[in-house]
Length: 341
Image (tube, rainbow, N blue to C red):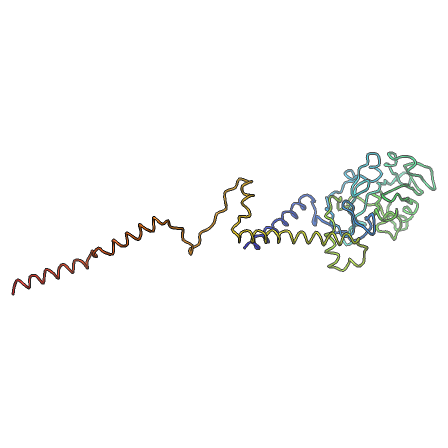
């Protein structure tokens, strides 16, 4: 009974947690499993607070650029998430639901300049001048046709190049009207943005309706269970300490309830109320003990003595009722018979 109650309680807790995450997230499922190493800050070691392979990341629904802080926008005040400046977004490449969503950092927003035929990068106005340069054109933040080069980006301080010449050529060759959007970058991708070429993850800037949302929160290591079950674990570099930490966490989750149940059973078998101290602290009533049918309440010696005496007195008295009446009638009949003789 204790085990069944524990299982039901654990099931209820899981349902409440998932339900709470769903309400917070606004989308289903509220958690995404990280299936690649593109956001790791090391290929040999994972860190809490950094998105590593096998982590579970909480998704918060968001489709408005105005609520997203990019890397360049965060330079002045140092706003950061997951170990680096700016927000991390989850998007569907080209808006397709058939493609695997990508979780990468929003580097900057670009706006297509229809009158000039280039791209504007408004956030360049808020970063130091030595942090960026234009190759193949004048150093301005608007109507850029050449390559924008950003220096000292990310945890590994790499150079990032946004080649707008190639991007405009790709739009023309694909017969798609140029548009702006977010430029995205994986923290571990050595400065190569998702929009680098036609063969990249998503060569077009990310539009608002392509977004699934923002990454908010992390449950480290537990996504490894899915990767091992579907065979993906052998295809991606998984830091060894992630595997070790997962095994330790599973051991604690499984072992602690079993240890508590075993301790309670042992103490109660020795007549010790394991919950008495806790009930006393919480000012709860004492634990009720149900009396079984086989176990009768204790009887005092005085009560036993009175019961025995009463029983003895009743044995010496003649029985009353019909039996006694019949005996008296027989005696009277015998006496009458004697008188007639």
